[in-house]
Image (cartoon, rainbow, N blue to C red; front, side):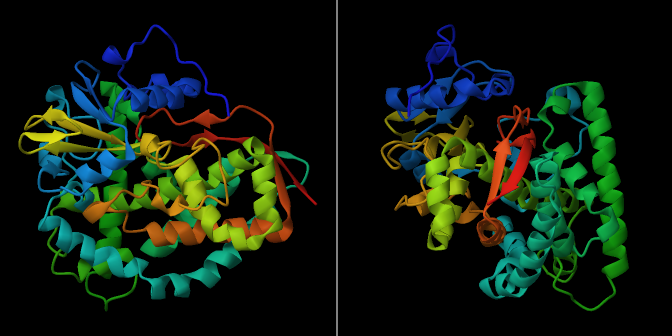
Length: 415
């Protein structure tokens, strides 16, 4: 597959690949990462809208950093997990500590609290309902008419799953989508007035979930995430800020990973028709195709760490306090690990080596659920021999963190 040329006016020495404005013209993003990998596994960006930071672009060196969590911190107190820092002018802005943005031992206890919701036994229990809802939704889609795949399929399926996990009032489930999009709205974060409005929406979320917490606090334990937090020693005495942070983590994690990979399924069947047809003709390829689709889409483009001490990585000295941005999107296109990496290939032998879920102690706690939902969607599409034709330009999220879509106009046909 031909590689697109990158704009010559942005040499690597000054390239701020984390600038979300660059991502609005997505054609150049993957070529930028390819050139960075060819030049070396680490690159320092001395000046950006988020301050100086290191770009880690190779599969090997991201795994190395993820495997050293005591040296490369995830803690919100040191900056957290995204490239964006809290701005000095917003010192009164609330913190949102969440277990993904904590180091050991706090991380261990809080993660362990919600982990039972994602065990193999729990996935088996959930699978029948997920399949029923997926089948009903696909059967309700119009044939031969334009509709938005993101809204009608990706959002509806993931939002419904979140509502079940939280035992959230079904009639209000689209609030979960609203809150997820608001929490990761990089455009609003850049503007003081929009950011103030963003926090008003997030406080609306806190009020709603506080009511649910209070309603369940004196009830017997149940298998929903709120009840699990209420009845766990590690989380029952969380501060309001920790409650907010963990809600945002669970909502965004449950929404963006699955939602944007589901939209990726519509993208790849238009970009790689022969490979998609191969999968549609052989259901045995679907389990591996789930991993390959997650690799290809990489729904969260990066995670950030902060060095706690001077350390050498890839022949470069990273100093204590410096920001390290691990580009999962680049690692999952690393040609040394994934030959012909830009292509969706359902027969790729090492598709499960992708880093879209992270690696080490912070690997996505809901990975099994994401794989289950995506696999069932592909299976139900295969049963119906659905064809989804893209009939307009995809609308991408304004972000270098969430690698996803706001809209995708399609027309569906059936064989």
